[in-house]
Amino acid sequence: MDDRRGVDKAALVRRALEKAGFADPPVAKLVETPLHTRRHADLAATRKAGEITLGLHKARSVEVVDMRECVLLRPEIVALLPELRVLLRSLQAFRSIGSVVINWLDHGPDILLRMDAAFTGPDRSRIIAFARAQHVLRMSVATGTELPEPVIILAPPVIAFSGVNVEPPPGAFLQASGAGEDAILGAVIAGLPKLTAKSRMTELFAGSGTISFALAQHARVEAFEGDAAAAAALDRAIKTHAMAGRMSVAQRDLHRRPLQAAEMAKSAVVVLDPPYAGASKQMRFLAASGVKRIIYISCNPDALAVDATQLCPAGYAVMAATPIDQFPYSENVESVVVLGKAK
Image (cartoon, rainbow, N blue to C red; front, side, top):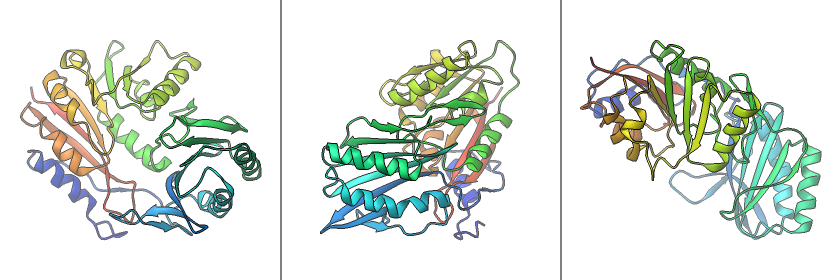
């Protein structure tokens, strides 16, 4: 039982796999991650009658609850919030709604402001002043759904994935904490089959390379990612570190253009880390590929249950399942599920 909320998160993963058709799946004990270590914050912002609210949406509501303290976030992120409210109040680009994405990288914060109006010259001057005062690595802006644009870069905004420095795009997805990332990598590597120098791995939904560089230490990796900025960041890191012989990345929307079964058939293992909604369009082809080992990383047991349903009748069995508590005080749970093809 997870005493941080009273939710048995290992049971959530077990029920998801049972719902998918796997009887008595081997689910390990929950791996807990420390509090005050979350390094990614995607905060909602509102302005009403001059009052600035910066925090999270109330459960199942559009209402934003102002955040003054948080036992999950790194203290350095929480310390930025009062000055961010002051900055937001001064921005002409912030009329009524917006968001602030903070990623704490290896050497400091990387911040993206997404607002509901165009950023003015005075806005940019205030943002630059804020970045200098708060030692922000990079400050970027975007209006509505536009692509982010860096306003100022004071130091390289990099994070090391398995020892390889990557410059993620503004507002990029990161695993919630370093400890959570380490737990995921440990379970993934433990789930790999025996590999040779000629072995090939396929990675789906690779992002900016969180898992890619760990995999590349064991065999050649062919990575696929739908987001253009994330794929470009991964490609730059591969080239910068002269890893083209061990890795490649292709931008491909796996929801609209899933990898076909024949494209995966020669892989020793397929590793996928889909978004919260899962990988429903990809799973039919993955099940038909006949690949001997699949490692599915999930942050949503409901999506895992739906996606894995296609693997059970295709002859796959759960070899191991590791639940990881990246989201304390919530009912969310991360998991790494290793599936093998029956002989």
